[in-house]
Image (cartoon, rainbow, N blue to C red; front, side, top):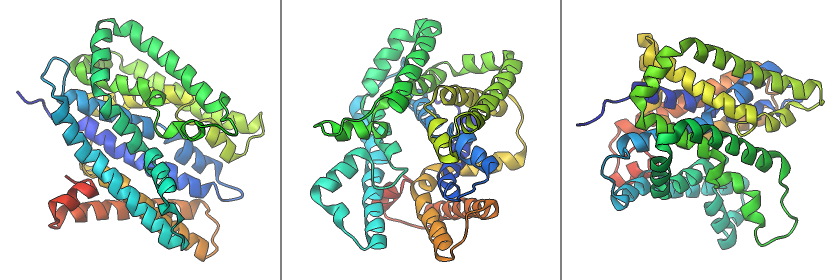
Length: 367
């Protein structure tokens, strides 16, 4: 018996895609010598849940499709996942290497050692590392299934301990550990955020657990609606307070504040959990207007090709800014956000409508 399609999960994909675009456009906004701090708070602070949320959604999809009590063929599973992630990863990595080489009139990125490091750590473009981490999660699926089976009956103990352990690990990885100046392991250390699944291990397991016990999770949320509202409100205030606090008390610049209050910071991890629970409750347990349903269904359906292509449109918009010697003020940033979102959306809809060879559909992330 097939399971029902979970619309709230698809809506979350669309929301997270909007958040990812916001984060990357925030980098342009930060080039303003006097950035709009409120706008930065929305783009770079409140949107930070988006990246770890995608790991939650990926885990949910995996364990919803392959539940622990159901049959699981690792070979069949892996072939499918390599087709949907590894092939697009290679295609888009090479595309962005070509794109950057042409733009910079230099082809040093294709030197064998440089190319190998780029593909290993997902360095061809700033967003592509996500697929490297996702591939490692996919490759280790038997391990995750084994661990979830062993801990499922003790979730009330396991998940708090896992969260605390993940917070400690991420704190040291983000703020304490410093790469040695020379070492055989230098690149593995420097680029640890680009491949090490331990940074997102809690949110992945949280997604897997939610998929395994989805009806029970929904029932729990219905009975704790007030708590979810208060939790989300407190988490938002804590994120914004931390962002403002490091600038006011420690005299951090906006850029330094963004590098400090991110998704792997302790408050960032709490905010990610609260936001996921809040929107799951809102979209699973409460009614959603028809307009919002259509919008987030549309965005959710094309979130993958939008994710893959949006840096192209962002680079075009940023190049226009540079060419016209414009200061990235709030009005320009909002226009840039709309431009990148709409062009990425139109591109994604177009490639789904036109007839393309099967291999190209796989490469573009639409099959």
